[in-house]
Image (tube, rainbow, N blue to C red):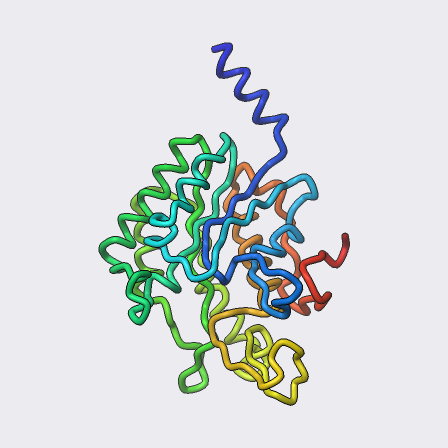
Length: 256
């Protein structure tokens, strides 16, 4: 009883933490890589100032390589009771060209997600599964689904294990549809040579990775879901606007 009260007191005193396990779409980047940004860089803009965001997302990682490279063990080793862990993978799990990343959506991918959930819960932290952010793909004037079987597995695991779910894939696809093909192009690394982007003087056509506006929208969508989930962290979440994303040249917050 005394130990339980002591733990409760410690949790109440500790600043809330959100830890992100993901890939390049959530990862942090330095100024030299701008305008590329991950949504994890600006999630703080939707949180109380005392919430610490520990962004452990790494580019090119799938659930398989995140485990094999020891990144998951490093995350688990630093978990504290009361932490919230956002788990978002799928882009690289579906990569059949770099086969070392690939996982079967109904095989190893499912197994790995269940392991992640169990490990986080064992540390008295809260896992949240996040579907991979939608790609800028269009077909017949409509956003095209790029993550079908992987998103389906995330939904299934979330249901089976009663894990909170953020459907970033579905929410981002809805946002793309609302904006339309041309306007939503401005959320991704889609630049022509005449756009005068210093990092891409010859232009770039990348339908996966997001720029500053895409990162801010992605973070706001994640925050909107977190606020609705009624988790312990939810009272610290105040989602940034979903429209008119700021362009500040980096990960600073408009009001900070």
